[in-house]
Image 1 (cartoon, rainbow, N blue to C red):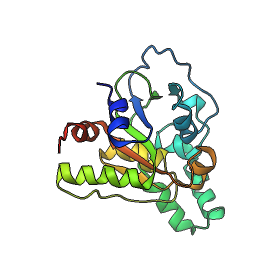
Image 2 (cartoon, helix red, strand yellow; image 1 turned 135 degrees about the vertical axis):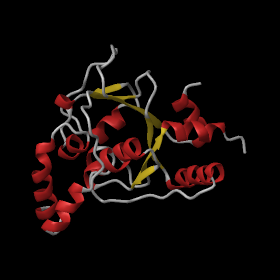
Image 3 (cartoon, rainbow, N blue to C red; image 1 turned 45 degrees about the vertical axis):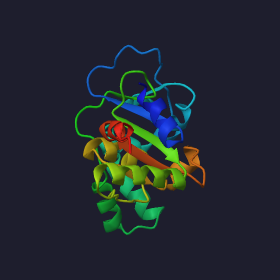
Length: 204
């Protein structure tokens, strides 16, 4: 069973399988793309597999949360302080509290064929509610979600889902909606692959 295809059939929407490579990159028939943001790459991968490497990513927030450029931390603080209207103390705390990957991440595969670590999608609210209902029925508990207005798809969905192994949701920061093609009626959501498999096994 192809997990992504089955999840699309059962839940609806278009889903992306995201694979994080901490060892060597496997031989893939996919050339790493250049000068792209993570949220852009998600949209691109709907039509063809995408391989992201540190050299090809063009986004301070994504580089920081993926552990690919920790030197951009101060630049991010200044941007959130001067451009986004946060106080300096608030901006520093926001950046410090971002979910981050520790360890050397070699690359990220989007819709490549070797098994994903997480599933990610831009869903309509009705599809989100259908998914949350399935989660509550299967696990017997509510989904607890932290929301943030910064570094949304890369940090507060992709990395949050991977690192903390829980459902993550974001309404999309201004950059994600500008560059990632997230339309007004869509919300970004991430699922650990184990949760996705459990939901598909639920026959109720």
